[in-house]
Image 1 (cartoon, one colour):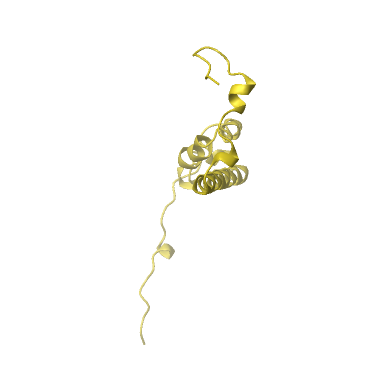
Image 2 (image 1 turned 60 degrees about the vertical axis):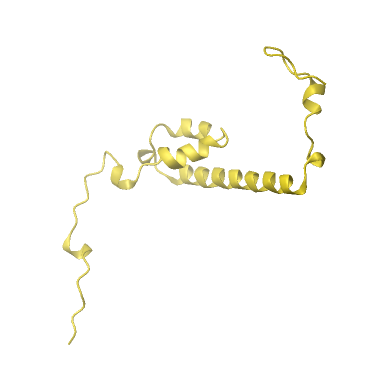
Length: 110
């Protein structure tokens, strides 16, 4: 069956004639499974982080990140790369001042 021309909608028969799981080789099936697991894992990690992270540590509204989370695969990757703000980057938090207790002093020998 021919593919629809530009601007036409695909019919059910045209979509159904696409490659089926049974037509894939073992290597192709393994690649699909590995990529699907990686995508699912990234989404789970990003969703868990977004759920636990306070809104002050998220760049932009959390609602938009939740919607973007399901735009695969760029949503979770985008959130993990760009959407998180580290606690030190929090604009409402005063800057951290190092104190002497943060420095490790060499141990004295008797």
